[in-house]
Image (cartoon, rainbow, N blue to C red; front, side, top):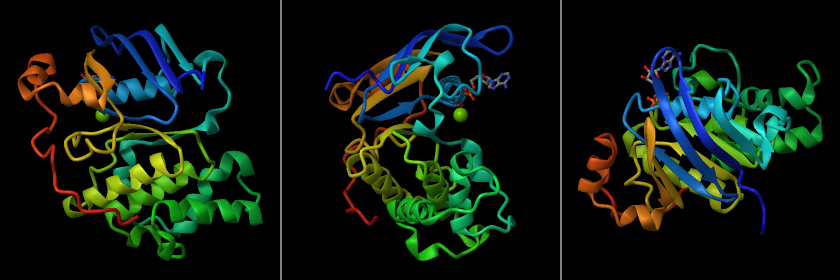
Length: 259
Ligand SMILES: Nc1ncnc2c1ncn2[C@@H]1O[C@H](COP(=O)(O)OP(=O)(O)O)[C@@H](O)[C@H]1O
Ligand SMILES: [Mg+2]
């Protein structure tokens, strides 16, 4: 039980040019958690993810991944990432669902080796986990925004990471499919044991699925369990960090899983 947090951020500040966009951030993500990271536009959410992933260099403070200082961390396939940009994927791209998901194994396979039976099994399992097994041979460009996003998640989990990091994944998802999309994420967390770090504006819709919440606006204004978060009222929250999260559909009617 005494495992180090999957992610631990200590005293991290960051600036691109003059002013800090993140200030003295302390955040830890325990194994098995489903952490919802919320904050208004421009509050530093994507910057924080890029620092965790090593896409930006940590200059002030420290990041630990699975207890290892990020600077000496090598097991990057333990961390899956679906970037905000996945939403603007070129839909004319000629690749099948199978090929897109297989590309998530490139690091393991090398660019030119074809998947063997073990890899094929992993590709099928990843596509099933996101509820898209009926689309394996379809062209990615023929799918809806939400279906494409599921495929990018399959690509991110095909190498069996311990944690999956998602930056506003529902931006291209049709509003009527958002709930089932989040049910799929809850399935990855609860049934497959993948730790999740999700940047979202829909904290109200997923309040029954996330275990922890962090509220960012340059400073980390709140970080705690969902139970603690629920004791805050709207006024506390807007005092804390302004607007930009939706609490109103807190007790949103449950539609049931359809993963
Ligand atoms: N590459 C960059 N160069 C300079 N400033 C940036 C860059 N990327 C983001 N910023 C600024 O940093 C702040 C935080 O941005 P970001 O992390 O993208 O916020 P969020 O994801 O919460 O919307 C914003 O003020 C943004 O304009
Ligand atoms: Mg962002």
